[in-house]
Amino acid sequence: MRWLILLAVGVLYRVRADGLDRWPEPPFLLLCNHHSGWDPMLVTSVVPERPRIIWFGPKEQDFSRGFKNRLMRFFGGVIPYNPEKTTLVSAVRAVRRVFDARGVLGIFAEGRVGFRESELLPFEEGAVAFASAAGVPIVPCAIVGSADLWFRCRVTVRFGEPIATGGFRGAPRRAELEERARAALSALLPGREPPLPAFRPLASIGEVLDGRDDRDRRRRERPRAERPR
Image 1 (cartoon, rainbow, N blue to C red):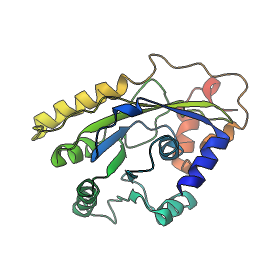
Image 2 (cartoon, rainbow, N blue to C red):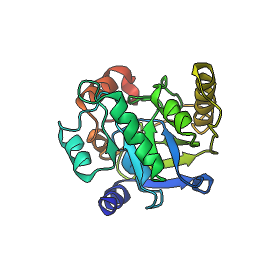
Image 3 (tube, one colour):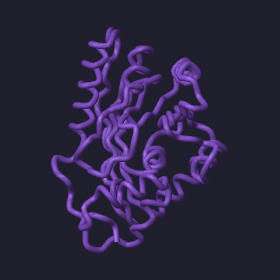
């Protein structure tokens, strides 16, 4: 799977890592923003082979339906969480097994795809709760350049300083930790929305791994002038 990802991402895009030297010793939680279905592959293409990142699926994800979801389920490396089919207890146990094995849990904190490079959507509760309960550090990870993808476009995956989570128990302290993590992730984003070039070859490849709902939202929510042509 890794070689397929390296090949596909290497051919289609120009991706580089910034701040990879800030990674602590595992286990830890990788807290990412989210623009595209390509995001897990973009991150995987620039990080070390070990420890492998295990991705926590968004709560609406159903890995038994759709080509992309079935492919991810076949290769493994995901923790599916569908409220209609998966209990929270079993999901928490799966997360705990990742940390007990000194692994890395990757989670998209916003819970859904956003379309602005310089902004974050509200966070879901799971990311900070998982990290604080296990006492593992949080590493903020900003994927910059994936809101609009085209052939050979530049994408930067930025990693921030680890955030210690020891002592952040209880709702008020978790809220404080979430604000700290959100501020750290926001600091890695561009200060303003980067302009899009007029010529974007093969701009449709950016939506290949998006679900239908995300494609529809993208067309509704992004200004017409910013949409890929």
